[in-house]
Amino acid sequence: MSRKSGGHPAFLPILCRAMEKKQAEDKTKDLADTDDTLGDFSPAVLPIDPGGGIAPGSFAIAEPPPRDFEAESCCTVGPCQHYWRIETPIETANPISYAELGLPEPKQIVRTCLAHPGTETQLSGDLPVLQCNRHEAMNAEAAASQRRHLIDLKKKMQQRKNRNDATATDIS
Image (cartoon, rainbow, N blue to C red):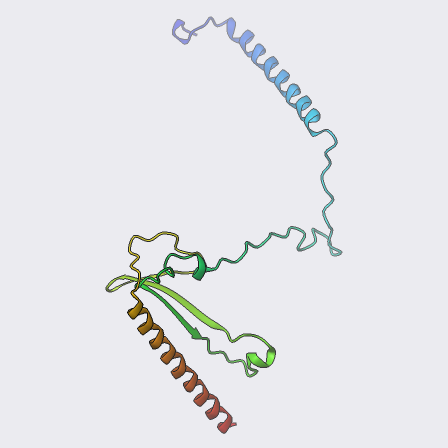
């Protein structure tokens, strides 16, 4: 060992033994601290499945409460003239109607922002838009016009559905 490495070659074994002794002391100290800290702790018994293993559902994760996009989103305040909400019925091959089953008709809801001409941003899921630098509140006249248009579309869709239902009963 040279002088540049910072020590005498005979000093190296003494240093190694001292480090090993310190590590052993630290290890026993850590174990003693762990025993004192745990005290009366004992792990819980896991539910065992009759077929062996851990029973399913024993680690249930709570679902977060559903969020209300319409109530929380800045797009619906005003409402913004760039915000479009399109709700359409989902066609299913189910021969039994949902009304007979006591279930609501399935619908697909698409939320879209058209802030720039030719650019469409899909607002997916139930997460609300909390802040938007393109929000432009719709004036009362435009909002009333849009509501009338949507009511007319809804009536046309209902008439179309009634015609389809009548045609289906005539065929059968």
